Image 1 (tube, rainbow over the protein chains, first blue to last red):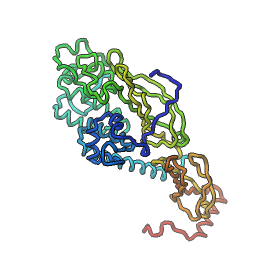
Image 2 (cartoon, chains in turn yellow, purple):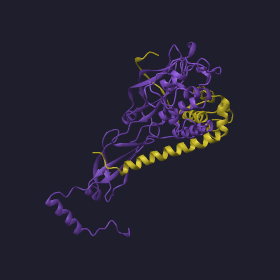
Image 3 (cartoon, rainbow over the protein chains, first blue to last red):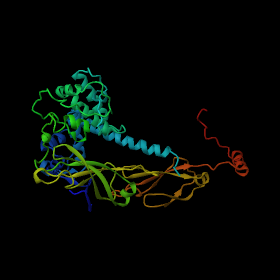
Image 4 (cartoon, helix red, strand yellow):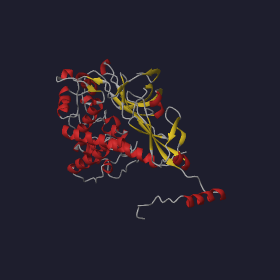
Length: 112
Length: 317
C-alpha cells in the first residue's frame, strides 16, 4: 500500500466473456445472496449454466449492474422493480448518447 | 475553510419544513445521481446535495447549523465560533450514515468524526467484517491505448482515515497495464488495491472504470470506430483509392464511383480488438475546392453549363 511503486499492476477486465458464480458475485459486490436471488427473480440478472443457483454463471459485467442497483436503492430509495426499470432506461440512454455522438461526428467537418 | 450554504444547495429558504427539505433532496438526488445524470460535474453536485441533506434532514444537526447565523454566505472563509456546539443534547451518535468520504472540510469540522455528531463510522458493515472496502475510480485513457494495449501511470486520490478518524485524501500513483481491446464503461479489477483491511485483514479491490479521452479524429461506439474522411468531388464521382487513417495506421480505401457525402464505408475488423473485433466506419465528406482564381472560377462555370444538375429537384423549393 505504499505510494509510488514501480510495479505494473495487471487487472481483470470485467467483460461479457468472463463469468463468475453466485458466491463470487456476492463477495465482489458485497451483497447478500438473497439480494442476488431477488435480482434474478426481477430479471435484473440473467444467469446461465443451470437451474440450481449453485450452477449459475453470471457474465462479469453483472457486477456493474449490481453496483448500480445497490446505489439506486441506497441513494434514491427505489425498489428492485424501479431499479430494473431505471437500469434499462440508463442503458438505452447510454446507447442513444453514443449514437448522437457518432452522428454529430459525421456532421462535423474534419478537424484537419 | 469555506462556509457551505446548505439551504442554497437544496434551493430552499431557511424556514423550509422537513418535508420540503426531503422533497428538494429527492428531486436533486435524482437529477444529479451519477448513474443517471450526464450533467457536467454531476458527481460533485450529487455529493454537495447529499452533504446538505445529511445536515438539514436531521433536526439536531440542522438547528446546530442554523445557530451559526444567517449572515454567512456560501464560499465565505469560515471558522467555527468557539463552543458553537455547546448546549445541545445529542442522541448517541450514528447519525452520519451516509458515506461522508467526499464531504467538505466544512462538514468534517462541524459534523464529522471528532465532533459531537461523530457516528459509528463503520456502521455500514458491508461484506466480510475484516476485508477492506473496495474502491472505485474512473480513469481516462487514450483510444490508442485500448487499441494497442499499454502500460500507464494513473494518479488517484485514495480516501483514508487519519489517526483521529477523519477522512483524508491521499494521492497515489499506480502503474497499470491497460489490456488491449478494453472498451469504455468496462471495469478493470485490481485485486488488493482498495482500502486496507481493518485489523490486518485483506485489502479490498480497486475497480477502474474505463473512459476514453475525446479523440480528434475518431468516435467510438462500443468496439466500432467512426471517422469522417474528406474527399474531392472527382474522387467521389469517379471513384479511386485513397488512404484512410485507422487506429492501426493508414489503410488503402477504395472509394466507389458515384459516392455522395455521408456515404458510410466499412473497414471490417479495424475497430477495437476483441473476440469479435469492432469495425471502422468511414463517412465520406465531399469538400469542394475554392473558386479563387480566374481559371478555377471559369472551370466551375463550365461545370454549371455542362451538367444539367439540380440537387434540389423534388424538394419543392
